Length: 225
Picture 1 (cartoon, rainbow, N blue to C red):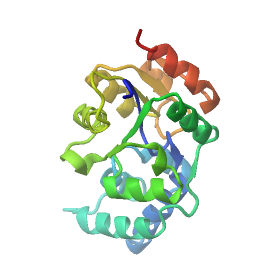
Picture 2 (picture 1 turned 180 degrees about the vertical axis):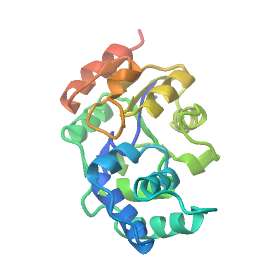
Picture 3 (picture 1 turned 45 degrees about the vertical axis):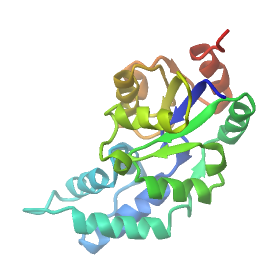
Picture 4 (picture 1 turned 30 degrees about the vertical axis):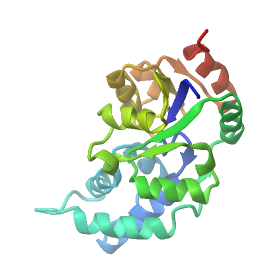
């Protein structure tokens, strides 16, 4: 039975989803008569779920309407995104080779994300990544979102590990805080979605490419005697 787990964020960590998130956000904004947001804006707005993404998009394109209720626009976003979830999204370079090696070496792998659990599973399946992960937890799984540590701890629990050692891999302040709140080390990637460089949040280790990840993981999760 595995006794080491690697838990990944999804958007901006495993997969570059910005193009499809931008398309879905701009679909909603167009219906409200707003300008489209740019790729740079999307990369800064992602990380706290689709409601926050839409709210930030509206603020950037003229402000929130008076007495704004995000739920109808959120439903339109989810419906459009679900139909177009993997048009241009792709795994980051070197990821699949890393996951294959971790799986070979007996690590348990999970996903802890602020994307809805159903959409997360749909995206991972569309990109042939679901075969690597024994658990996927989103904000709707427990009704709480990162940086609350409970989604992370639930991901580890669902992997069925006995007294596991675990590490978080993420791209944002939210992921760093999640790891800190869960009491586990965290590796950060700089190519994801964050309004400030992720190095500013003092992760335990930084990698610039997934070719560097295995050694970083093993240094933080050495094999037990």
